[in-house]
Length: 249
Image (tube, rainbow, N blue to C red; front, side, top):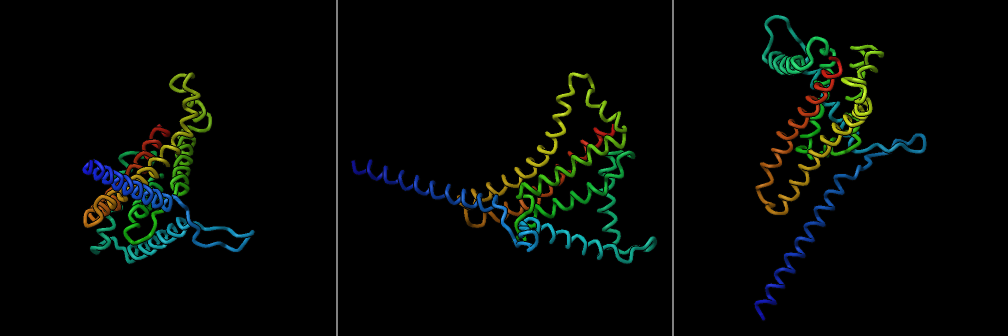
């Protein structure tokens, strides 16, 4: 009888700890999902500026400063190591997208490169103590909306308005409703894939911190903030490139 009571007490203790851990995880998740207001612009009754917007401004400032520094004193001959490194990275990214889009789609490469670099930095900015903008569904939604507008524009530009509208009835007219629905499915897919993966990584890290709070989370945090962040940036721009290629064919 005594051993049975002790066993029940142990089960109750474990249940309480599990409940407390669940509550902690829920609170942490709600804090991440909560789009906090960094400050309010005192015009038109007050315009709230979200924290994700401020972090995006910081990323933009860093990219502009880096572009200014790396783009100085460029030479056609006797290029320095800094210029060679920049040309290698930029050339590699350009060739990657050119292989996907071909000559007809090369005008969209600068946009894809810019978005890819932004998402990669936004995903790993958590290493510097800032909240990643891609944890805000508004940011990922805006990125997806811009991409889908570009995708549809590329189709109009390549086929003309008449050919673009006609493509909705291909390969057979019965596919018209599905092709129209696809216009709305694509941005939702891009948005939720990016947002869901970043948020999923956060949930996994919080669970690992509960189970093993010492040492173990450090290498995994580097994995999710660096490797997984770059993977998500790659997937987003890769899918956008495929959609553009499909639209201009």
